[in-house]
Image 1 (cartoon, rainbow, N blue to C red):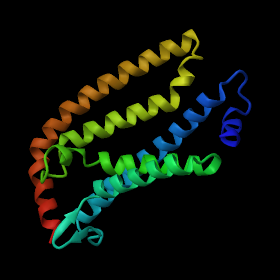
Image 2 (image 1 turned 180 degrees about the vertical axis):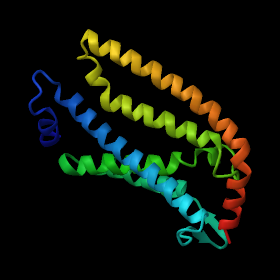
Image 3 (image 1 turned 135 degrees about the horizontal axis):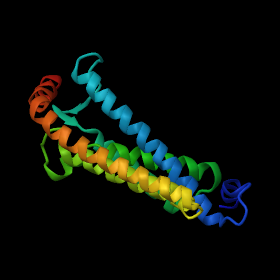
Image 4 (image 1 turned 90 degrees about the horizontal axis):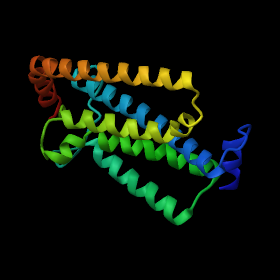
Length: 193
């Protein structure tokens, strides 16, 4: 842990090395999470619209959803962290893989709740938003303590703006879901053999 914590605190006077390392790891996990979520959704859209070959894995006619890949990755990362206790670059890579696994798993969170349900469940988007927010909080919360008064005002304004945007996005998504939902579900059904 010494190598990674010294790298994480370089140039930061009075910074707790353990907290700095945790922040750095959370940022790696958040990066992997966001990129993987975007990639997974993009691949699904491209396959369903037939702009990309069907790369879905089927086992005896059953589509193995990517949440299963995420579960196996989470198990692997957990075992690696527990039994190897990595440090330095290996620990940062483990944090990145953890973020990737979380995205693969939570992208299909709605299927945890409703087995056999559609990919387009609202619960999946809610779960992705919540996990991303928690990872972002872990990644950037320590920076909040060093805010000056002007930063706090800007932060409050940003929170209000994001909240208003969230309400508008939620309302719009409900309306779009009623209009586009049946078409997306038909695309999903047509893309499977």
